[in-house]
Image (cartoon, rainbow, N blue to C red; front, top):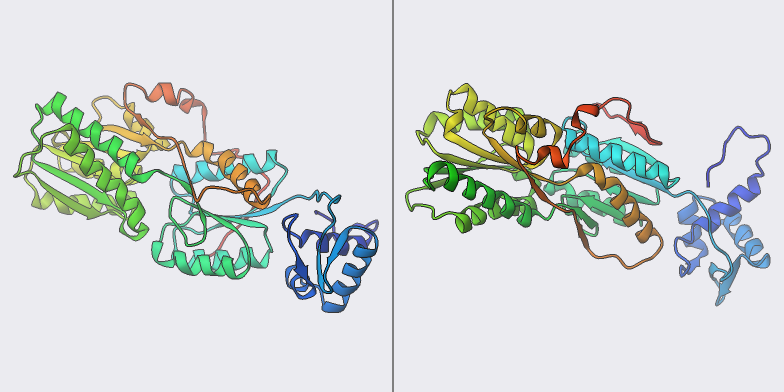
Length: 387
């Protein structure tokens, strides 16, 4: 329930009573006095008097001597308060997830508190602490580092806050995002078919650009690429596979591929990247070395920058697997409402993937020229952190 601290018409006792009713997070919740104290932050005496009064007025049923639950005829109506710990805003994928989520929250009349993890583990931990202090009903967590996922999860679990994890699994969270192996398999199949058409099936090396700190699940994306190439193409025994860690970022991937090219003399190289910034960084390194024609690259996410490159003449970015981040918001809000409503939800919800190529990019994204990153509207409150 939203109230204004400055309204002279607000009846504080009713506000306090509504907070007690909101402590019952599902119709089946049975709470003790100390549970209500913990969830509301009110002192014990106030909670006791409010529980007694709400029971006398028929809003609460008493279960045994010291437990309460919502009366069957009471239907709570309130504005949910969700937290969104955004991965960052450097990549268009992250910006589109955030913008779509803010639009979906506004349509659903949900208050959305946004914090920016800035792609930094320490900031992600502080973001979790902030959202817990804000007493949000549910958190949508988008951060990349698998090593701190258990620590972040422990914070939410201890605070009894349900949470959804985007793309990187967190213990106890409902997963929402990529079907990593399937997306990788699609990329591998496309690379293999491209090599058959353009290189007569002859490949000297396969280069995989990883994001190691994201952990094991995104790594299956690259495993799928390798399997997909093998299923589409008879790879010669002397064809080696090389992996480099681009950390999911353009400049890092560019530098790692520069180093790789100083060592490799291969002339037909299939490149599978964990995301589009990595793919574009690799492409730039090949171009700098004057070896663009030695590679064929497939990215992941079909981000705006990759779509622009797919439209370029004679590009060696031959495809990107689309995840449609602009549609994440509606799915995330539906999932959050199901969780908060006590509905049974699956442990993982996967997004739909399609191969986007120079030939079909305008079919999937016909309005790119009309879009801009400015003017994004939403109801979120952004809380920046300094590094």
